[in-house]
Length: 210
Image (cartoon, rainbow, N blue to C red; front, top):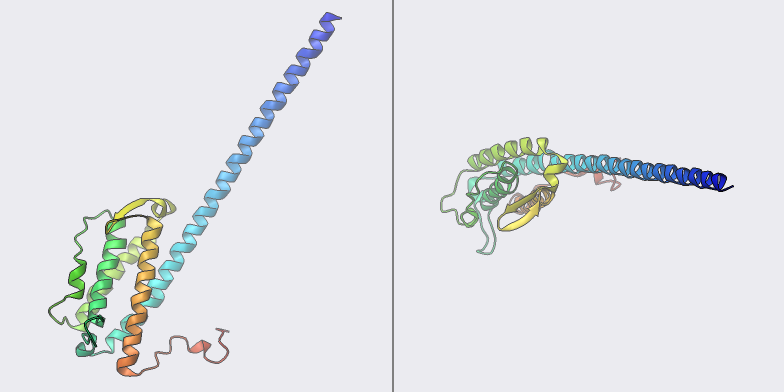
């Protein structure tokens, strides 16, 4: 009887060990599956974020703003109604500095030589076509940077303009900042010329695109 009891206990012990081991393997497998799903999900979200950022900057804000500025005279571009307001020329210099510092310089790990105050204190009235050419070259370089960014770039840490931010913060800051001044330039254009820019004509009738 002792041998039988001992054998029974041994079998039970081995069964429990195997069951415990299988449970551990199953839990580990499930955890790995969840991690892979999260990684895939994060990658997909990063791709969506970058593509939306690209569309806003390069398919909407920049081409629309460029067409508006191109229709203004140099005098209109540098017009300032009062000292508290910025001219279109100042804003173009400012956008050039911002995109260079926050997107091109940060992700390329370049030395930061931006002089932000100078963007608002430009002594000479630079011609509009020159301003557009400068910003156009900057936007083209920024498009190349945005096209190669990966999820790990968005989670990386950067030190920009005295702030510690993530790569996602940097991209979002550029898009949001560009959109704000894009709106200001469009408003100045409408005040100076009284034109209907027609950027959303498809919404005029029903308020919907289709």
